[in-house]
Image (cartoon, rainbow, N blue to C red; front, side):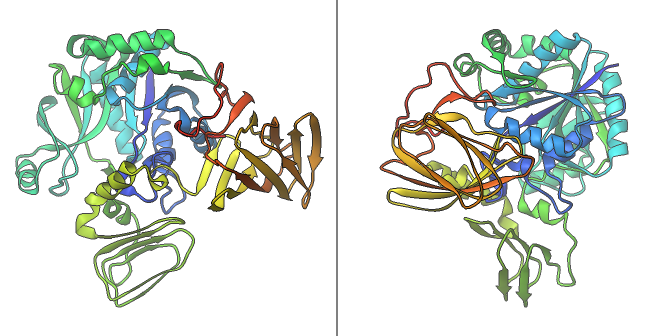
Length: 481
């Protein structure tokens, strides 16, 4: 029986702001052991006999995900389905099912895994997957349920009679959650197992408009970089935006559940993250450089700076380079409202960290003001930015470490540490690291408009050039180098 794990990697992880952002969502959060939630999902997928993995994600996250997988040694052959924007998990599952059916046949068993969950006991999880795959081979859609450890308002619940699912229940009030625990309901893990043919059959019966729209989108889509399919944006926008649970699982008559005890958590709040850190004598859990006096029951996480607290209790304190969160432990689920406010105002802190990852490396805005912006740029060994030009800004590049190969207008030349070049607005230019060491440089931008969308690409090894790419418009949505 061929099992193909399908990782769904998306969402904003709004309850884990400010570490989680739209372009650095929850799956990329690193835990105390140094691994990200996405990397743990990848290792979870590497079950005995599994050789191939499918990942459905936003195109902007593609290269970051590949880097995360490479850190794990990449034992699985990975293919990708790249969404131009999110349309819900029903669309993601439909895309994966149709692609897997075409490549591996209708009997291929899909194991659908969110990229942002945590499982403590891999052997128990593997046993649950084996049971689920046997049931899935009979034509059933299988979900994984967990025996509740406590009444939890942040999880959905499953009412089951043996293996048969009677109904799904959305996130309840605390009173209802206690009733469900007392009645023997299971937590709904959001993980699924079914054959590609079975889920296509059930989608055809219960959400045919989603399946038809996805078929049309796949027919219009094209191969992207590596083993990736880039979904056509125009047709993908016509796919109804809804969850797989609502579109299929809550309606199908062929739904079964495998109950397991494998230490599952969806890591849905800072309180859940805190539980992964050992508490001190005062019940405080600390990650980073923190100094506390007369403090109890707090979770403190600092990335770069000293964090100090005096005379407080039961707080979540999260410090990042550009934002600080202070919340009562009892209100950890409500952090999403702060994220919504930032997003509503179009604030960059909802979208990006100051350190921005790109296929070629990273950049960080060090300072900006009227008419100027200063960045630190680090280019990975052998990597290259696109051949590009800007309409509204000039740039001054200063190499501080490593060797740079530069295209500036008609010239191509090398720059060493403490050397620089000036790039006038309108000049075609490219930055490349031809060595096996990292290249670090400072970029000083000057001009009347310094948005990241002031870019025209002519050539790019990462497949980011679009046909007839338009000149930058300061009012257009931002794209990235």
